[in-house]
Length: 116
Image 1 (tube, rainbow, N blue to C red):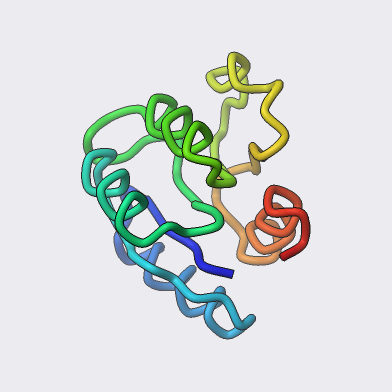
Image 2: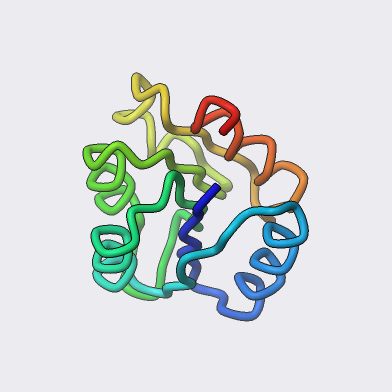
């Protein structure tokens, strides 16, 4: 599975990358802003993205919406899933609690991609 990681915490993203790659996933990029994450998503065509609810550029809700519109599964680590309530009808969206745990992230990634 090809995965994009978007986080305001680059060090935590590097740790997540190692965990995902150890499980056989390919991380196509680690980005800290919505603009750079969307650019990489359009270029690399990941099957899914894992992101924090806040990026260095601000809230990630708009990025999540854009990625979902592109058919990319989205896993959002958040302390407040209410902020993503408007996207709740999207089957390719999963919210997991912060701090992000690699086991939860991998399970949610499989859910939003149908297990691929």
